[in-house]
Amino acid sequence: MFVRALRSIVREKKNGVIAPGSLGFVNAFSSASASQSQRLAGKVAVITGGASGIGKATAVEFVRNGAKVIIADVQDDLGHAVATELGPGAACYTRCDVSDEAQVAAAVDLAVARHGQLDVMFNNAGIGGNPVRPPLGAVDIADFDRVMATNARGVLAGLKHAARVMVPRRRGSIICTASTAGVVGTVVNPSYSASKAAVLGLVRAMAAEMARSGVRVNAISPGAVATPLAMETFGSWFPGKSAEEIRRIIEVDVSSMDGTVLEPEDIARAALYLASDEAKYVSGHNLIVDGGYAVSRTAK
Ligand SMILES: NC(=O)c1ccc[n+]([C@@H]2O[C@H](COP(=O)([O-])OP(=O)(O)OC[C@H]3O[C@@H](n4cnc5c(N)ncnc54)[C@H](O)[C@@H]3O)[C@@H](O)[C@H]2O)c1
Image 1 (spheres, rainbow, N blue to C red):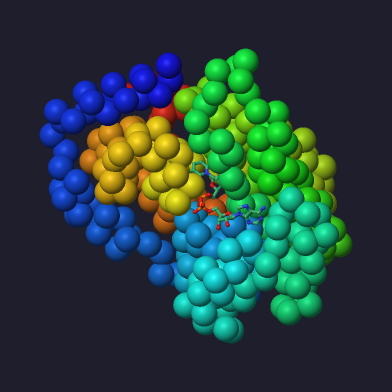
Image 2 (cartoon, protein in one colour; image 1 turned 60 degrees about the vertical axis):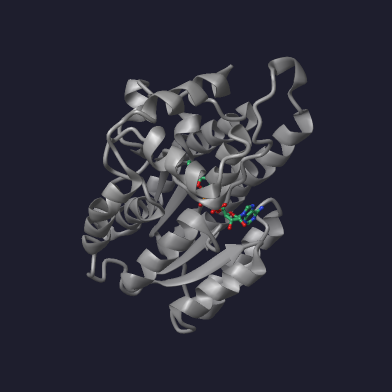
């Protein structure tokens, strides 16, 4: 039913005025406005899910701003390639399945062993689970467990082990990727929505305790961004459409802001703010980056 509604939105939008090519200026403008300053100079960050999509864009943004980053992911080839692109002095890759607490602990320890400290933990790795939303009677409980193990348990492990090394220094910023799907009911798999609501719950539960130790804890909730995760999910809702058509559905048809595309770099810049000292008193916040969708619920 939800996907049918989404399809009709896309059909209606087809008669709209925005051609994909007309977004070029907007994209060029948003890239040109990227910060050239060194807002994270001297800081060390671990980015889970850093081999792709939002995590990769954040690794690029953090390094551009003077940070050293550890890319922690399960896609070894992509992770190594991103680290190589960023340069060996600035980035390295480590295999880390966030559903395994010991591997999360090891990624944090690697940051400390290599650079002497951890300033920013970006708990960003995530999976979508079953892309097709089943009727409630057919929900796969095993899929719920898998999604929770990565999206929620992985975040709790990241919080725990980042705090282990940050609290003694009485400083640090922990950022967790949630989603608009954790804020409002959406068309996506309910296991995914529940896992993202759990991320927000963890941030709220830990913020006050961590603040007393000098460590900030925040969430970012992106709207739909055309990363591999979203491309796969939307692709399953619109079988037979090309990758280019799926990208257009995400970036244009279901976008909250006509004429503006939500890109991984927009989420990276939100993470940059929360990671930087500019956000020194910001904790327990959920920075929603969705063009107003979650508060208005007037999805097209
Ligand atoms: N793309 C969107 O529309 C959207 C919207 C809201 C929230 N998010 C969230 O953003 C985060 C990043 O996703 P993305 O959109 O960049 O997708 P992506 O698929 O490009 O990146 C996700 C990364 O996480 C990694 N990963 C998956 N399971 C892992 C595990 N167990 N351990 C370590 N790494 C693992 C993947 O290998 C991948 O590199 C996720 O938490 C996702 O739920 C995405």
